[in-house]
Length: 464
Image 1 (tube, rainbow, N blue to C red):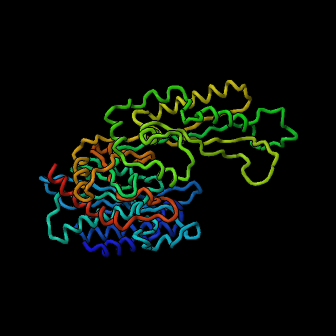
Image 2 (cartoon, rainbow, N blue to C red):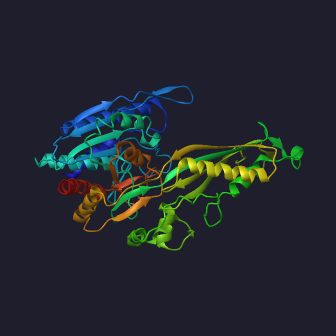
């Protein structure tokens, strides 16, 4: 494959402002255009393509916006071959050149071997790398080693609206012949060493509201005679986690999977330069001093983060106000085998206990607004072995076997609904900056990543 061809298409794809986060008709039109371009690309490869109408999305302000179609595509249906389904998304996070970008985010720009542009690594580059790998076999007039299916959406950054219902509906149709599912929507843990991801943390997001009345108070008129909502809330938030990062909610660690010797060895094998990691994070000191402890607390132990307070006075200047009603926001990253509804009960009970001891006359309400389960795969599955072999072939090294501290709900969703093995094969380097200004994919990662996918098809055929 001519790398210029791949880059040309990546340039065209990045130029489409397929932002799904801002609910604006112009961006929705761009999303529809992006999905049409992708469907056309797959059709020209010879794939059988269906664009599934996803209906529309009702927004809180009453307006309704169309949801871009989901592409279901198939190439090959040889019953003697394995069938690999690739999931990707073509929507992007918002990007604005005035907001810290050094180049126009929608013009793919190469600087020192780095291809800058919104969506370059998340997720247009990896989707194209997979398509390029398929087209390489076509260009060489070689038979594809495996049957290939695609499921490509345009609403991932906005929470994959309506996707779960579609997967449920297609479980016994489109997905019936699928043996393995591949996702390439995360990053390596280093700049040069490839990785395979076999687990992600879940997330439970909480709001805790403390209310005295709808209006704020003057601290000169009421200070000293009230149970102040802010004082209650600060005490509640302060009861959740200690200074070493240990979560203080009783029972929260009960269901955390026990640590095995084998697991400790996988952390030891991972290449992570702590000094470089600390410097690039611009942090003076982490809570832990060893690579193994840091990786375990990012991946296999839960963490609790306090995000903010709604209703508090947070502007510059000195305003003598007592907020009448405040809402604290925090979340817990969940790990195997924690259960979302058990965590909800534990957190609620803990906050109720702490609040009752304050004898406050205020009203407290705890609500969990998001509950996403953690995901973990069996690294001895066929496709993990195939991915390892393919990485050895292309990069000449063993991959880092990593987990991701954030949440990729789609992995768990496929595993739960379709009951097929899911693997995450990232292509991007740790410093690609997805979601942030100056997002990029290295030219080397993009081209070697395309080779990796082609080698993966060959290895899958051998192992299947």
